[in-house]
Length: 260
Image (cartoon, rainbow, N blue to C red; front, top):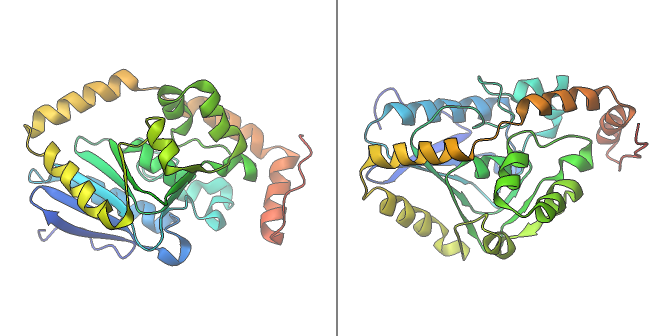
């Protein structure tokens, strides 16, 4: 660490090994749901890591029993969730932020909604055996616009992508591994060491070559659905169902969808 590193209570930082930074999402009481403050803090750390030539890999994990349960719904339903957008307009804390360093998501528990989209935005995913993933946005009258649609379209057979996106149901870690979404699944006690071992393997290669190769791969895989997604979201927000989702959330009841 040096004198200009951020001071951030909701994103903790440590250095478990040379050239490795570990960032820990720190809202365990809210299952690490990201609010506007956490979005800002994570962006500060991303920018800090990009400036440090000694940093080659970043491990992103969570505190407590969850990796990240997505956006804080209290803020997501306020002014269309605008307060949760990062400085580049991303729908989750990492989306659209330029970076060259390699990021490893270490899922210590469930990755839900925007939490899963954050993990998918990383370059590698290792997970504990008891972790689960889901994109429940459609169950709340929302859309997963943080890159999940294009990521799943690129990584999964269309029928499996539709299953995740259109039902909002959870998927177990072993199935995600078998489908190629995860790199490794280990028991919870081995997760931190497994993520660190992967980082150290990556750090044995020439860092600028690794970053350049990764950038070319990301460019080849790139598909930006955010513009179309913005139009779809605006249409949704004008619907009766969207207003019903707000009423249902405030009343803590299941929404009564009308399809209009």
